[in-house]
Image 1 (cartoon, rainbow, N blue to C red):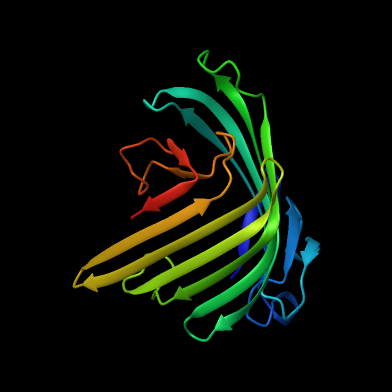
Image 2 (cartoon, one colour; image 1 turned 90 degrees about the horizontal axis):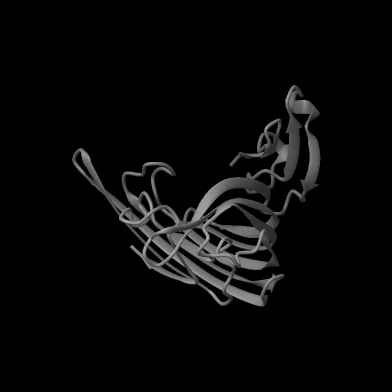
Length: 232
């Protein structure tokens, strides 16, 4: 129940779920801390904190490079994308079955092209979107291991409502299911997901993406973009 994410090459953000002073009653990290290169763990700065009865506080930053494609699979542009998010979840453990969460979240996404084809002269130099809203999530987790499970199942349902800077009010509904069973030395896994969003985003920001390893490997990573996904 600990986590860490790079803020830049010399700084990480992390949640330290060790000891009663740093955890919620359900065992999650209750503060977000910033640790710079060369600092001791005890010197990390607390930048966000919640109470002991709250569920979990989280923050994260992701930087990656992506590619835009046309319908034939030809490259149109390459871009750098930055995602940053921060939030607070309040919730109730659901016995040994899972948990229910209700939380507030804020996410900012920006994308800037680094190489653009002459076929798309009108592509903006930079696009960005900011979401602020609430989400309700229900998780039923009966897998024996979080990574590489051998038996069990996991069901997740999440609904989000809020305001988006590029499109006004938005709604999202996401569900997924996973089942695993082992026979002798072989394990078999079945996964499915349904996802939908009410507002369409600029291409480089996108709604949902498919393509690449375990995500329709016949397509390139992130080649398929859209507001609705049905995948198994």
